[in-house]
Image (tube, rainbow, N blue to C red; front, top):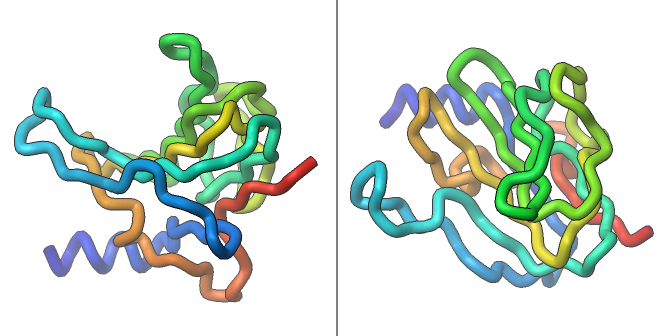
Length: 142
């Protein structure tokens, strides 16, 4: 666990949302790969709010799954940050992005998940603020 904490601290993949943003569905670690749980955190958002990237890296996937938009950023080999429940997408697979770059707009909530070597990690364990104190992932009204 110490190694995981060091990796997460080093990448600074944490996120900050506006004060008072309601968590709709918190992270719940599943008991097994196919068991129930929530592999990320979901916040309430208004439809059309701008969603910005929580991490720097290469967009590994940008598309729709079961009607919702999803953007997966490969931060480094084995470390993925997923932004989900998006309406419109602002990036494409292969794009290079930095924290704060727009990835799309909210469809009514924002999901952020982190996977390290295929295993879900509580996004809150990534730290809540960038070293500069600037937000890493935010929802912004258009």
